[in-house]
Length: 429
Ligand code: CMX
Image (cartoon, rainbow, N blue to C red; front, side, top):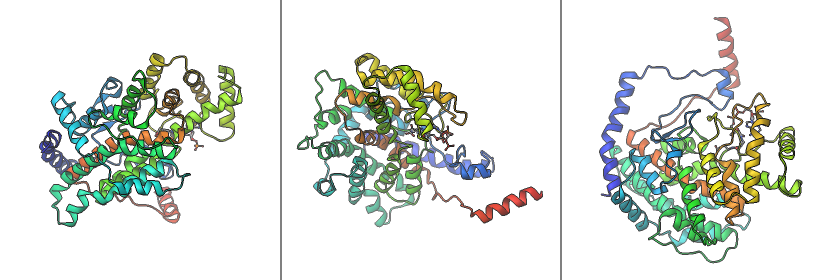
């Protein structure tokens, strides 16, 4: 058994007992109220699940197992995966063992490439990426063992194996999609001696003379790893996994949610918005021009991508990490400069709109300009990068859920008529 699996296996009884005892002893404690507005408001604020891998206090931003993401920016994504699962960062030996394990599982079967090659040239990179994960379902150890009569106590073990297999393959799948979809030439073989970020950067084939793009990829994968359990992609994956659909089904389903413009796709939209301003004003716009353009965007009924959040009420620390990276490595880049100017102007514009609860930038506001600087100019691709990283959090949450023995998710819906009756009954009291 690998070091990571052994470490997690030791935690399983505690996870399981805590869940059982919690429900037995404190099951009646009330945590949230559901009003009519909640039903129509995307269930905002309803505490509806347990997620220990990470949390997002509105005034602090992402904490991975209690540690602020801003203090983890020098960590490799592989270290973050270890932290998500165990609550501890790996030491040198544990990290090396994990990387070796990933390398041993990295080979992607040829049939996956054949399916991707058969897809239309106009397919969105996210559709290609998520299709590859679904096609790989053929490899699921969870499904094979379930079909063979696996005991409930072993679900987490099979889910762990699937998670390792999937995460090991995603950098290569992502790079393959990039090169195929954007006519970059033949795929570049994976190098098992490199860490994830470095291997991915190399497999894209983008020039990286001073290693800065590699550094950016490591940072990118680290920053996007998880964002608690209630966001669209994590919650969708959680719901799918609760039906005991395996990790391949659950992850690709969750990532289909990440492909939405109000969620992960915002990073492609965000750079598009910045480049649109450059086009409109014939170069890097002034603060006044940006203010006007942001107002026009709002007046046209569009959102300013990269700004606002369903939970956060501060500048996203992940934005700050990217912002600082750009300030260090490419402060004079035109797209970076415009992005920095947008940061000065847009929150002030959004603050004037009463209904907007969070006028501050989220993770998607800064990353695009950095990718653009390093030659990754195909912005429909950006959400795939987000997905490679977010798979760590989604699959880790899935393992923990199976260890907990979480039941199938099944909230109750109401018809409009039932709602009318409930409202009338409340008024009659
Ligand atoms: N530009 C314009 N309007 C915005 C806005 C923005 N950046 N952020 C919020 N609003 C609007 C909402 O559209 C909503 O309008 P309606 O009531 O007319 O529908 C109103 O303000 C209230 O929204 P909210 O309560 O502040 O925010 P929500 O929780 O409803 O939505 C989010 C959050 C992220 C979808 C929203 O801020 C948004 O659309 N932002 C732009 C897209 C984006 O950057 N998404 C990426 C988020 C990060 C991620 O999950 O990946």
